[in-house]
Image 1 (cartoon, helix red, strand yellow):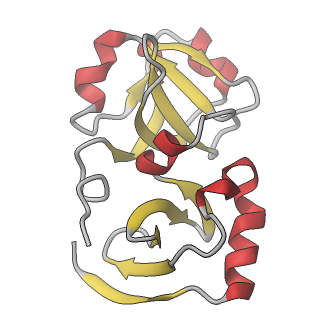
Image 2 (cartoon, rainbow, N blue to C red):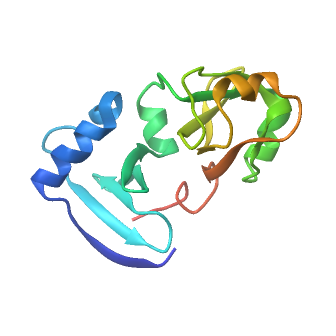
Length: 158
């Protein structure tokens, strides 16, 4: 990962991001050191040195490390255990592997993919089809993977 810029986030911008994060705003506790890291990957927000938030199309969303620190409440796609090894390699989510999906998911939404046994985050990505279609379809892609366990963002260390 090539780092272009790293700087502290201004209070006004920080409040703006916290408002957009909604239920995940607790990822940025009071009096924590918050920095933004611009790189060749999507921009990251470091909270006390940990990459907990990723910025996609100007919108903040928790990284997998952030999702592990805060329970996932919405925009969740559950995949069967057969899909886990493919997800760990960065594969896109295929509809046959989807066991359950949030019905509020629309095409283009950012989602978190979890396994069916432990509900632990495996990847995050962009929905290609709606949540209802993910469960009902028996072929084709459902989610385009953007960040997965074991990638450069997951292994990032300051």
